[in-house]
Image 1 (tube, one colour):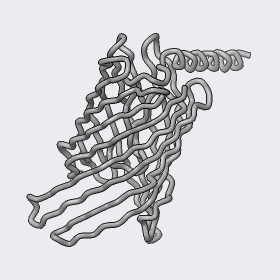
Image 2 (cartoon, helix red, strand yellow; image 1 turned 180 degrees about the vertical axis):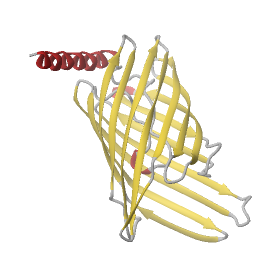
Image 3 (cartoon, helix red, strand yellow; image 1 turned 120 degrees about the horizontal axis):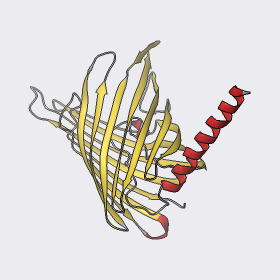
Length: 278
């Protein structure tokens, strides 16, 4: 009987936390909603999601620029992609999301040897559960899988799993502080061999509502490779702006400026547009 009572109390506690998250999370139309998916990973893999779940459809147009003119041989690349994402709120605090890179164009110039090509894929699928922590704080746990659907790969596949958590603090009517931590484990399978990496990811940012329809955000994103070799992948300050439009539509801009790490990308910019009915 004591074990059954403990299980019932635990279920009631979890339900109360989930219900609390639904009360704290803003409804559709709040511009101070983040973090925006960023980085140059495939189909949002490695990008911490929003803490609060929602039903939503969104499009992201992304460009990444790398210019390494100081090398012995010149190297540069331009990558442009379009990513579609859908989120569906299953119940209070829980949501399912699917994202796919529907088009990617790559141009690479290595010592005046240029190559270019277009591709589609990959895709990701994720589940998230939010919990209330007090009167103004929401936390969430999520898991995301990278699906090996990529026309750019002539041989081999890339898949992986990502798990993490986030936190959002609604500090008054104008300020929102959010962020989180995740561990991404991409797996590259080629030639009958599987190569696994472990990449810890951390993000912290703050949003300021300037008006009911516009908010500005600033933060810092860190990617580290923990295995098989340890090293800083990228340290990225980020600036964002989000606008609530009419009839539940919204638009956002995200600019990321990597300043350190083995990833030599100089600039990543994203234009987001979406519709949030609830």
